[in-house]
Image (cartoon, rainbow, N blue to C red; front, side):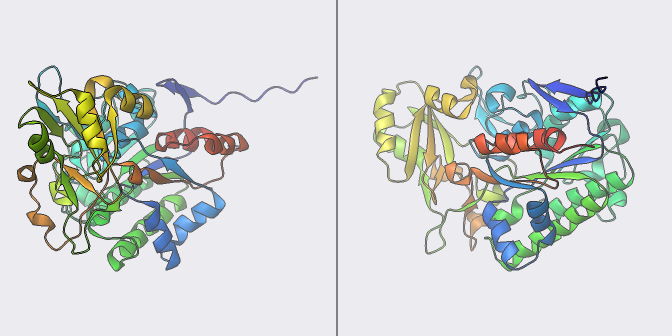
Length: 421
């Protein structure tokens, strides 16, 4: 007599991918700006034993982040399990071609598909999302029937709007400064408390990259932060959670030997060559936290305006600049990085490693970078990110990772890749 086949675990399909419902608490952490170099440097000093244990006993790989390597498109890729051509978010800041207006992403309007978090919550799973920066909250919480809060505005949470109140009291300390390491630690501590209270079976924690913008790998400040995060990862594991860790982007030094920012102000250069106002540069790294990076990163978009020169001529000019690694047409950049065409420029410009791109010098306030080396992201040099799962994954998932691994595969590996009894 044939054995009765094992029942198929309950699952949901979100954006074309099937996900099993969690059988035990499952946590995905977006460790913002955690370039692999930070893990390597911290491991050399022995301050991240939990991460090292996860790497050895679980699953450890390097994945490719979404390009441009900025916070918003990568967080949206992670929580949708899909690239920007599906979810529609290709920057923190973009030009609306229909209205001609600059749009900073501070809500969920640019998002064009459901999230894993929202769909799971609608299916009855206890879901919580905690983000460092409030700019992400509305997008992350779209369709989410559960708990959603930001550390930045934790004191403002209400049960009606966020599914929870008195968050500082729950965590045990006041709302942290947005320009501090504690902003990220507050996120992790909130997540720990939610698990302790049995308020979440699926938890997404999105940190801040303040420390990585300010401090290089291996510095005392960076290693101290890595150690503090590591301790909290240990607490999540002690609570019985499966933990997946991924970064939204890496981080690169973009300063000269004298510590000044190594910037190509592309708007000024294009004006001088082709005429003022004929071409417009949009910096999609722009967000409310310009003190981190001065709105300077490794990827910008160029739009032709009235009286614009032939774009082939502009492309040839850009490709000849020593600071530029690649200049791609709209079609080329969309095809290569799976980006939505209607939110792309006529030309995408990617800087060489160690170079930041800006619009016009007058558009960027660099005064708050005085005495601090510019560290930023956006280009291809920041695409490699850590991808760690606290438990081993099945042979099928190891084969999948060997073929191709993207940062937005993390929910798939945590929910589907870990073997279940």
